[in-house]
Image (cartoon, rainbow, N blue to C red; front, side):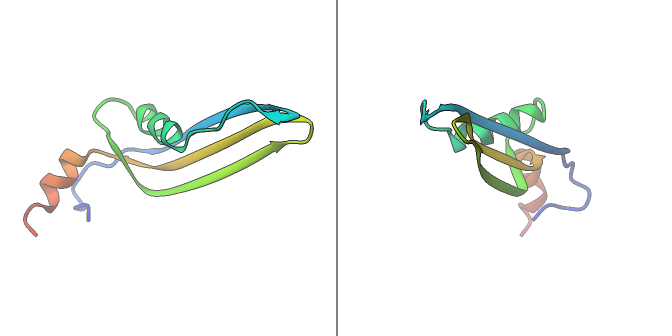
Length: 86
C-alpha cells in the first residue's frame, strides 16, 4: 500500500501492435506494452498500479492487433520505503 505522502506518477499508457493484412504479421506483446507505459512516465518509475489491460482487434481485411496498458506509474523504491514499517 502506498503512503499518502509518497510520490505517484501520472496516468500513462503503453501500446504494442502488429499489422494485420488478411493474416496476422506476428503477435503483439503484453510485456512490451507494459514496458512502453512505464518508460513513458520517465526515469525513476519502474511499476504500475491501478492498471487496466485491453486487447484490441482493429481490422476487417487490414488493420492491427494490439495490447494496450494503462496505469499510474510508481517507483518500487518509494513504495518499499513507505511500506517497510509494516
